[in-house]
Amino acid sequence: MTFLPIVERELRVAARQPATSLGRFLVALVGIVLWLGLWGARHGKTTPADIGGKLFVGLGILLFVWCMVAGVFLTADCLSSEKREGTLGLLFLTDLRGYDIVLGKLASTSLRSVSAVLAMLPVLALPLLLGGVTAGEFWRVVLALLVTLFLSLTCGLFMSAATRQSRAGMGATFLFLFFTNCVLPLLKLSVLDDVKLSEFVTRLLVWPSQTFLLERAWSATASLVDYWGCIAASTAMALFFVGAASLALPLAWRERGYAGSVRKAARKLRLSNWVNPYSWRARRGQAPGLLVSGLISLGAVTSVALLFDTHRTIAKGGRPGWSFAISLLTAFGAHQLFKYMVASESSRCFSEDRRNGTMELLLVSPLAPAAIIRGQRAALASLFRAPAWILVGLNMFLILAHKLTAPFGPQFETWTMVLAGGMVLVLADYYGLTWTGMWLGLRSRKHHRAVLATLLRVMLPSWAVAFLLFAGLGRGRLNFEEMLISWMFLGAAVSLMVGQFAQMELRAHFRALARAEEPRRFGDSRDMISLPGFRLTRLREDAA
Image (cartoon, rainbow, N blue to C red; front, side, top):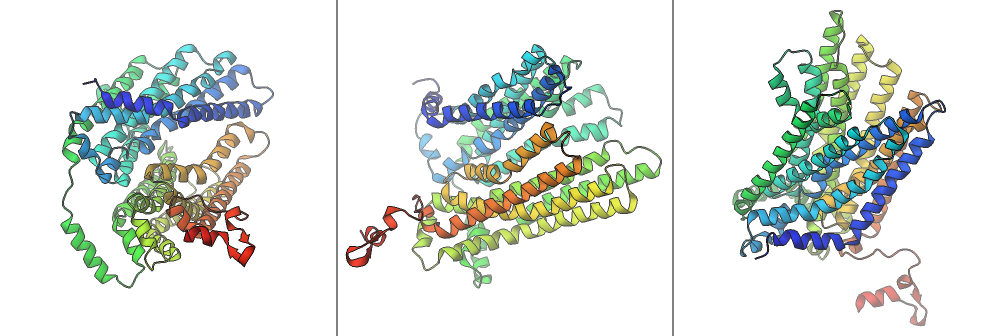
């Protein structure tokens, strides 16, 4: 038997797909465009060494974010989808072992992401020609990016092996990466710098963080012990995830009984038989409402608690340190977590129903497409209504707290602008994410692809403009408040326009999308009237 046969096959298949080479080209093109944009926005008195260092940091941050979230969208559903389709058990009827399947999936899903990162490296190396960046810093950052990508992919692989639903695997992967890359650095800044702990305990808390790893890679005066310690910790966690997935997969693929859940669902159906039937169908597989509201409430309570700590420190005559900045970052993280969950849930039900054939059965029933859309929207509203009001209440409380006590931080006008714009963006992004998620979920059989495409269509344009504005294009031309207004206005406009387009497409071509057909546009020859007998060609084709 060939050693690791699935790895060999998956690598051959992935290498021959046009999307692999197209992805490398697009990633390199985006890097070059960003590099030229930032270079053209430089100040006239800026030296080449300064602009080279800024370009290196900016592109490094973008690559790091991609490497960090790659596991959420590439590997977090690769094994659980096989469980849901019932094909994983067939593989274990052969001589294949758990590590054969795990490594094969890792190879097939990681080839595109690794090739995309490698395609960006020549662009990342351009600041070496300008000065301000040494070869040691460059190679340390490259190694940190590759290790972060390896950890993210293996974490998603393990979560996919341990779960059955795509939402659970993607959510668990996201929470782990959020904890290691956001919670641990914030804990170090807010607690460890004020509390004297032993050097061993400090390193034990910061070494698993890839954010700390990237910071050590950039710092020319940093101790290499911390850098290589982070590399060793991240690699050890990645290898642990691979081994745990290989051991758990042969035990987790079997079907489990769902008699209790079926009886509970039947009771809910009897109690709520007056509602839209598809709304009941969509609510059955949703995440628990208490879990969603609890996660948002946890972020809101943490932000308020840190703000109270800021006021207490100022009242005693001291400086608040990092508590005020972490309060802002926590509130911002709660907003982004809410938007990610909206994108995930809005595309899940349609994607699953199209993949398993449920949507085709629904379309031959008396249930109209408009009723299906209303049911899905009602299910989403019931799940996200409370978290949305929690975020709006959090922003209003932060505005009031700043007005009454004026803590350390930005001016009240800027503060109010940021928080009021955040409330507007919650509503606008909810509209855009729900309609775009339903539309792309109906078009895609892979849930993680629908989630990624939804976030890219709704969130990426405003974030790209924000990066260009604050990185250089807005400096010297717009002040800080004007850049904030431009960013928020653009974000709301993009969300509304993309959501409106998705709504029109979904309402006009629902049946064609559910049948995996290309929607017929106005002016299509198949929709033209046949003059002899005044019969419609489209009706004749459908009848045939």
